[in-house]
Image (tube, rainbow, N blue to C red; front, side, top):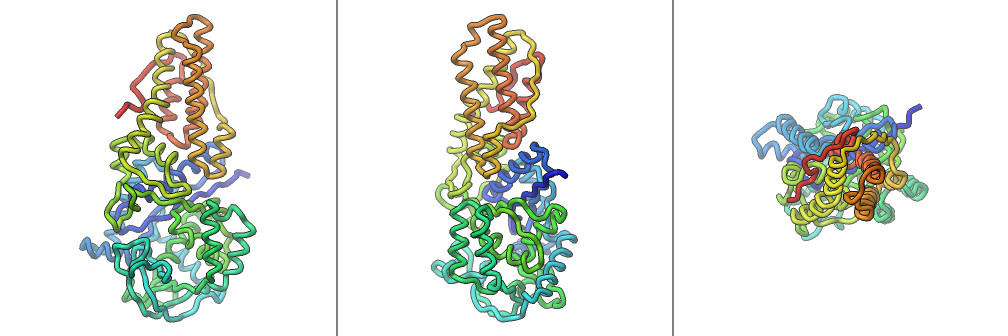
Length: 463
């Protein structure tokens, strides 16, 4: 039986087109998906758009469009952004997809049948930016700490509630018994700390007069299902044959919903739990969190146009917010591009290709079909940055080998021996790069396929 691997990212609100902060998780999820395909695993990679709720409804109204027309446009543009980043998703799910709606209705009924849904009254604050109810600890100066430019909505309404509190002990035990359930460790500690404060039942519907753009509550058309309850079920509806997921990759602001609410929902409905939830840090631009609501966004297409797709992928895989928040700027990306790619990998490729071309020798194409063990180990541990570091050590070692042996001073078999070793080293490097920089890896493989090797245009021209 083939080994299965199922990776997901968070799906994005369709109030505006995604920015590089959303794209980071898609890039590292793509690395995982490509890696597992390379290992021969039956792999499914799910991403998509979260299209219901007040955020999208209000954005559509502001644009003078009906919600479906508006989310169709945003979803299409989001998909285009991911395609520019060479994201190899197997499905781009939309929460307006008929099969998703059907799954949400069935899931709701299972939770209801388990006695975990009741009608009650909610009083408090709601942030449309987060599409979530806010605790007092999450409010700073009367605003949501994550969306300080938005006004909080004070609500007093009748809703359906999910008995989240019922699952507090179950959640705590599962997290303690499964050290890899929440990663990194800092997020695991945060979630255990949150549980210590106690869980309250959560409203999972909104009155239709408040939020009409949503899936109606089964049996009560006057209420629509809360967007988080709806959207998070996409992981089941998007690839039911692959459930449970091996890893959900998402931003740290979404860890609570994925690590505490989602498992409680799954337990209630009778589903298995995902194996790992990975919550990465934020990308800041010049010291400030990139945010649609702040308007300080950089779209993937802007970076790809300036640096090229694999340079963008490289920068964020190597220097992205895997654990802690990171600050980026165009100057930093340019500096890394020139040092690591133009002067590093690109220069090595040019040197060896030119030496091979000038030698006139024919080279046997060494077929590589096994990933370096240390690279594989790093990817299994979600250390994408460490995996790239190992590959770049191979690049440095090969460069040093050329410098030490000075092939430009050699002739005959001695020269061919040095060049053959160098070409074989590049074959290994190219294979290792396939999950990370797929276009670059394929270009290297093609250029050094042999038997005659020729120099070509620089892979990464200096900028």
